Length: 111
Length: 118
Image 1 (tube, chains in turn purple, blue):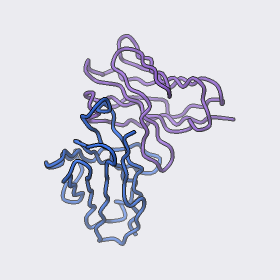
Image 2 (tube, rainbow over the protein chains, first blue to last red; image 1 turned 60 degrees about the horizontal axis):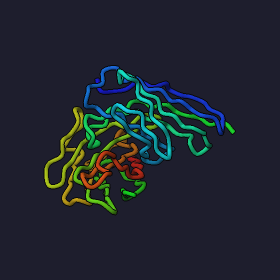
Image 3 (cartoon, helix red, strand yellow; image 1 turned 90 degrees about the horizontal axis):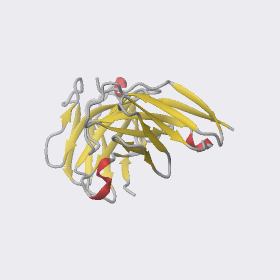
Image 4 (tube, each protein chain N blue to C red; image 1 turned 30 degrees about the vertical axis):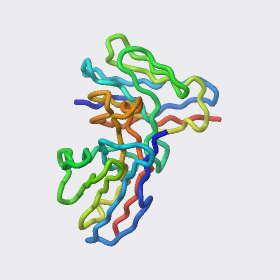
């Protein structure tokens, strides 16, 4: 099963860091981990992706466990605009092919 | 950045009619396009993958004769919902990927099309 597991929902206060966990215990050695987020009635937006090493970009950081069976998306300072559904996706190669979306985590950010 | 558009953004049609949804990559060539369906408060479900100039590959359980996909150029893919019924009402989202430059490891998603079948 290529799906990942995530908590259904999480809450955070504005300006605080948020750690969104994801389990992908059956991941294979060549699968990439992608994170996307979706606002209501919009298409998903790319956040970050990685393979083995931790990754940073202007939006977030991605921490990947050494055994690659789990990862954590880190938003360093949550804003109200970060409220969205966050999807952790196992991709079968680095060309964005064969995305299988799990149910995602609905993040609420409290002012 | 890479932009994907969809048209129309929303459509309402009568049961039994066919509806065509367009997906365009505006500033890059999309070697592969994907079509997803999303029901309210549910996740995205991949319907089919299409490569330019070849037949689409449909996911299990998706009727290829009902959801016709055409990917005739590197910037345009269309999804036609034939003989639509109320249960086809959903949010349809396309995405595109490209082997060009450094963006090939992402899927770029369109804004979605809300289909309501009366």
